[in-house]
Amino acid sequence: MNKKLQTMLAEGPVTFTFTKKNGEQRKMTATTNPNFIPENKEIVQNHSTAFRVYDVENKGYRAISMDAEIMF
Image (tube, rainbow, N blue to C red; front, side, top):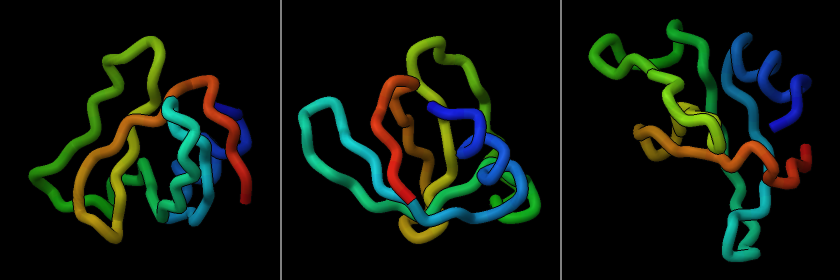
């Protein structure tokens, strides 16, 4: 997970594409900014190999591998 994306996610929703572990491309609009996440859905970053984000379109949490290829 690159620092640029982490900074952008903290500011608000970001649309990006990444490569999943199985090689599949996934497009997502996500954020880590609490102002865009329902009150009862706080993000907990408790994974050393994945970064948790809130998928604003599918209204749920997703984990992105720290070494995933990210494209804007």
